[in-house]
Image 1 (cartoon, rainbow, N blue to C red):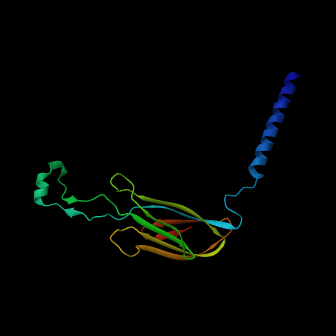
Image 2 (cartoon, rainbow, N blue to C red):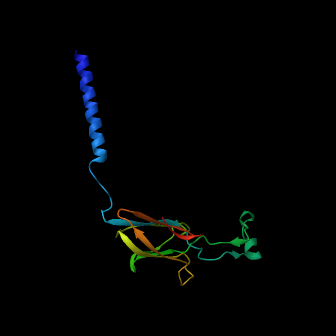
Image 3 (cartoon, rainbow, N blue to C red):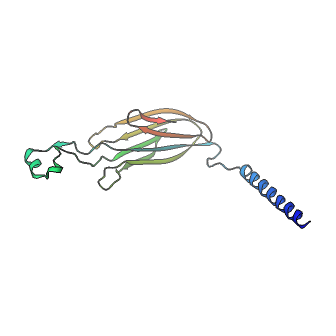
Length: 166
């Protein structure tokens, strides 16, 4: 008798726990985005162009080096900072000059920014300059996007194709 009461009590406890877990998985409605808003996320990694071009070493320079280090080309590892600008409807929402990572400033620059916007039609302007020797923009993209409520629009970048809106 005591054993059957214990099994019945355990079964009721498990059923109560399962019901509570099921309720809490659907009942408290939560959305990280407000009902009439959307979010535009700018997220990518990009390496700037090299600061200096490779140069050919002279015969005297090569002779002064140990035999195992006689590479005829000398290339700087340092990369240019990456300038990123993101504007929505003519208003700049994100603008940064991102320094390259790494001890020798030879790494990738990382971009991650979230911008909440009201749902609807917006004009998005993107600009990226990855060469410190240029005065104009290297990559520019303008697009009209229709954002639905609670939509997340992700903007990525590929050096071959430019900006990608997903």
